[in-house]
Length: 370
Image: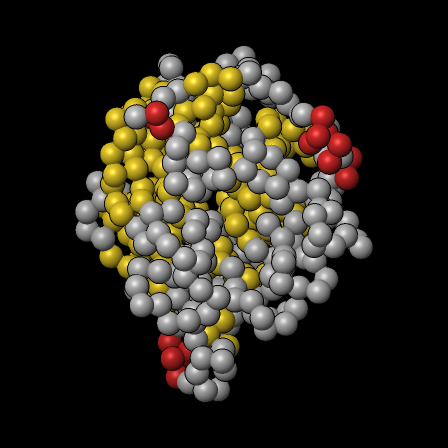
């Protein structure tokens, strides 16, 4: 049971190799905002705060879950704790009713959580998931008394033989009662509960090989009962993918269009609604999305965190705007010259924002104060 042991290891905020890559001065934020490296976290993906306020992150490539306790609230963790090891591509974690849940590529497991010792024990498989081929990340979210898990497609564009792929699945909290909640979602890596509407919102990565500007990446409101969001036959605002069906096919008119369209190939991953009190009032309730960055585009795009303002009903207004930029500079290419690739976003109990970067192996902490 090696994978279920907790190990304490010392933390180095920035190794020499990463320090050479990382230049925080390149990262640009709106006036009044500040960014620092919170912790070194190789291959860190999605994050969550424990019931006691400790930040945890899934380290997908390392097959582990890490904890970063900061008991004195200094803004930097006192140490790094390896909570779990030997996992199968863990992409996301969540806490629910005192237990830690880990979404691996082929399953979701729950663990008993010991806050004082930062230990996760007694692993139990809650649900089994499709686990081979194509998009391998799985994201778990608890909301409205249910458990939701996103399962990406097995291909770029195809009709899936396993209907659980390219969906967000819904379960009872104990893993029973499986049903397809939302279909037609090629790869929804990020899930978040909109506190205004009480509905689940999801990022979606569109298909490749339609050129630099098609199809748009998306942010979708899955509503109260899900529905069909179009893939593989449609994309964007009910546009027909003519590689799959004929123009004007009525199936597209029956799908749900996105709430927000994003530049193609930006690769939106983590999504969070700002629910803290640290940021100025005009930022509260806003949507923040991590754009991991393009590979299938002649001119790179993404590699930043964007902000989407919302009205008092929780609906997006205006176009997405840059919040953190600089992980890639004009003229940079896809040959490893980017400074980092943001993945997950979580808001801490203190109102600070935390952003993971799986390329540079860092977690950043963003605060506001003049």
